[in-house]
Amino acid sequence: MSSGQGSAGNVIAALASFFIPGLGQLVQGRLLAAVTHFVLATVLWLILLGWIVHLWSIIDAAMFKPPYRCYH
Image (cartoon, rainbow, N blue to C red; front, side, top):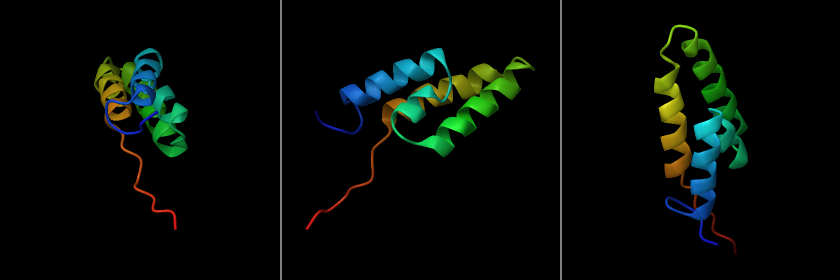
């Protein structure tokens, strides 16, 4: 399975973030990003602006490219 933008893993992560902001980042192993997205969305939903972070979370999960690693 390929990794990077458009991969099946990113599609699954984007779908996860659709349901719970930050869940897609957690699936990708990015704990700090996951917590950030979840907390921001939760706080901003209280003033009806959480949809902005929610959308950002989905797009971020879908477009994530893991850093290139060279194994020698």
